[in-house]
Image: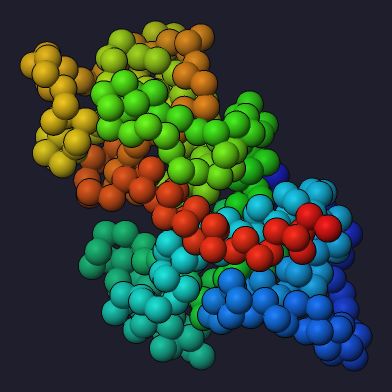
Length: 333
């Protein structure tokens, strides 16, 4: 299912959201340095400080533009930092292909050629920058106009942070529109089998799934419902046909790849539940409250690949968020 993304109506140009003259900007930076400079190194890592400093110094303007209160802006800011921490450890590691492309950033023609070459070899578009954006995602959220060009923004901490903030804001709007609640996320299936007691998320299911969307795509940002198989829930937005069928894995091989690394399958005793599920009947009238899926494989999660899970991704982001406790009073005041 394709989503039509809506963006905030900016009273100023998204290219320069605050329209501050160079002189005024310099004066404001000095004032903000006195107000917030002590936070650098206290709980905010130096690598991401330019982004956090910018948001703190312009929180009133950003809150007005995004039409959110200060606390929500703080939550989105901390989540943005958490995403960058999880994606690249604040830029401390990137793949060789990223380094190669970014080394050519002074020449847009070379960047395009490098991206095309690597894409043809890997059969996928590379992710770039501290937040590991793909160019398709960058364009989908109109970040060229809201932040700057895809390639030239890749190593700029402030621009990468703003790009995550704006795209996360878009997804959060989508989550609330889709009826997701500001209540703690749960995975009732894993709880039933004793694999987890709770999910260490943000305490806000709508925000949790919005965070997950950065890595797993927008299709996960929806309510989830029961199916004819007790081990699998279905995303309501993906249901097709009058019979409301859902196929959790693309192929039987995808299922086998997932099952080989699944702690859930190790707990299951019924041999019938260990078989390839194929197409399942879904019951969109039986919504699982505040459900957070445990997927693998990133945006291609129906392929069943990889060992890293969506719950692990969210909890990793939230670990970085918790380190930012010193920001709370600045956004709650």
